[in-house]
Length: 176
Image (cartoon, rainbow, N blue to C red; front, top):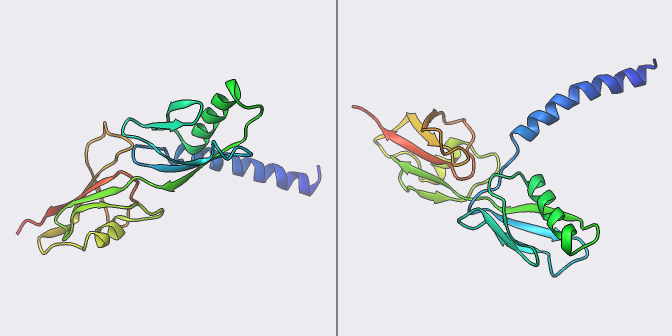
């Protein structure tokens, strides 16, 4: 066996578990997301669409598709199948995120409210967007409720932890 083939096999085995881990943490569409859907060579079917309050996209010809909880590639596959079933021969569809749903910061921050999500954001970034801590804000007592798993209760979170779209971050009061 050549050294090149051995290297490819080793890299192949090292790569496979990593790609599976990435798919497990892939972004899931949710209420409030805005997507850009491209149906190649079909300008009338291409456009920007909002995921409505029921988790549904309304698309030309194929109507309503429930996409909340789907990854971008899953949504892309479903849309491709729907267009292929009755309307297009071998459609090629691409789904991209235009705007993520907002996250929320409440509690002991200067300006509580909703804020636009930016990829790679941390809790500290989110608190900075909300004007920082009030004098009573406890930087060691921050909790989050993740929108992508509503069955889970609030969890303690640190300033360097990542924020996800739809998260509700609450900064609790200091005890004097």
